[in-house]
Image (cartoon, rainbow, N blue to C red; front, side, top):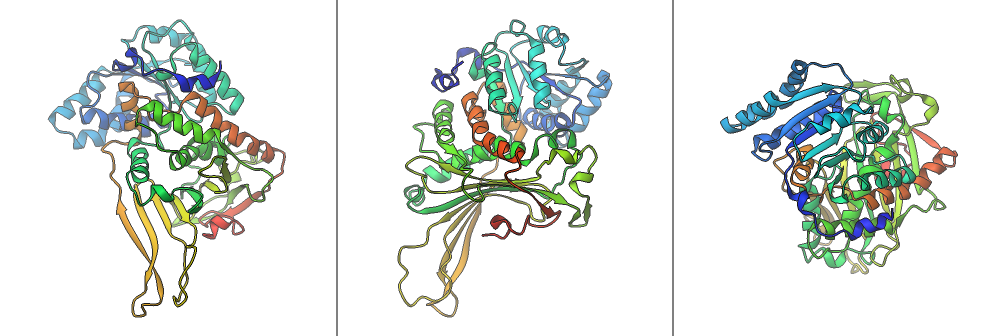
Length: 478
């Protein structure tokens, strides 16, 4: 299959406009379903935006329907508490009508289950990537009801080759518009806050290029440590888990040219164009960095060394902090480094994009103080906007001083997974990652991963609760 043809699809087909009647969650007994997916669905139901939906769970844990209903009760509790009478009735109805099926989702019995469900059906693979691929193979190409949507969690595949192979398999079963490779990190509010900021403001768009911007940094530093996720994380690491899966998408939104419309095809075409032009120059010093946390303290918590965490194999050399510098080879961005960094067990939670502008070409003689570059900060969760600029300081009108203009950006009334599910149920793939784009994300990071596996980049260390390795410029705020 030529995955580039995915970018040339027609408008969303008629069957994709038919609302989903049944949501089948594979891996329903797992942590992600209970902690993220079901609460997101609950708020969607509470707000009347999932009418008539039937929820079905399937998993490898030997649960009864009563046990499953207890999980739903826990996940729906907050939404139930805040709901009005109609919302509570809708939540109760979905809970009462829901059923759980104990089965190995990688075996043929999965296809038999799907055949009994009212369609259109959305099948949510709330599973590790390797298990998701086995579950998909168990479905069979001829067993899916018409209009079925497949919802795949990222990372999509484990490298470019596996992503391409999975795309080929999926394309034989359902149309591209019915494949939702979800990125819960990019909710609809975040996406359109970025797009609105960029394209609705004359003050920004004319200077949004290499003529005026020195660098763009995208951070996702969290205080959370491994948190019992060794089974997945110790085989993924920070580069695969966050940068490949999420931050490259944020980068593309910050860098794309203005689409003609906000229709999914226009928007995703432009995202794809940015990623196709992107690469990491492995010959450039510091183009990729990796590190792993050692024992330390974060607030009042004692954090053990990563290699001492249950389930971790020290021989995997898994990084808990990763950083890459991406070059976008086009007229707008040539020469501007896009620095993407994400890590765990850090002392300061930092989830933002920072756009640093070039210094002014001439500062009149007579001003005193430090002329600091203008910076625009876009925060994620909560979504915020800060513009750092130089103004005349107090007392001495010739002295430059720093001030920050800040505001909160509009938030959605849904949880991240609620936004994902709303698009799935309505057949809107705008927030889904298209197949060719998923492959390009792997193409960008695969050479980095290869260089790491060959020991070409050292595995640095940082103390849990610190800002990261002291030698890294991003740890020092440079």
